[in-house]
Each structure stands twice: as structure tokens, then as C-alpha cells.
Image (cartoon, rainbow, N blue to C red; front, side):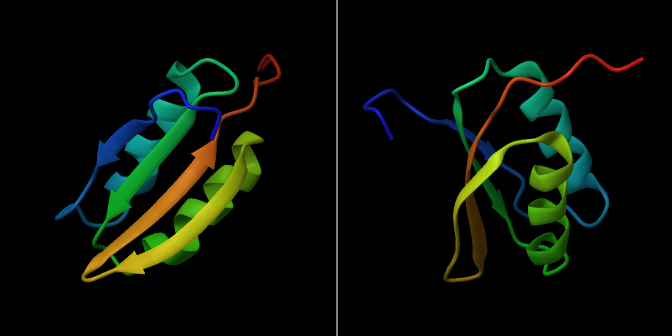
Length: 83
């Protein structure tokens, strides 16, 4: 990270598909270059969040398990216009 604060999205307790839907909304709302940290407890997030990042054009900086939490650190990229 470049010293700027990350945006943290705490989605603990939410079940599929809510974590990926809320993470997508957050990624689309943030400016390019922003760091987004997504915290989930749903085991499906281990599959869904990396796929979301790939689809949305971001970069997964890290994915780790911390206790019961899954923590994803994502760099948000500029999105191409949707037609």
C-alpha cells in the first residue's frame, strides 16, 4: 500500500450471495487505485471474491484466513464503461 488508508468492508455474518454483491458495489463506487479490504465469514467467499476481482478488473493483493474471518485485500482498477 502507498500509505493511504484502506476502505474496509466488514461483511462478517452475511451468506452467499450478499458478500460478493456488496463487494462488487463497493468496488464500483471506489476510485481507481483505492485499496479495499473485504472481511467475510462465509466459506464460499474464498471462491466468489477472487472471481469477482478478476471480473471487475481489480488486483487481489492478498487473501488470508484470520481466525474465522477471510480477509481479502484488493486494489481497485478503473472500470471500462458498460454498454
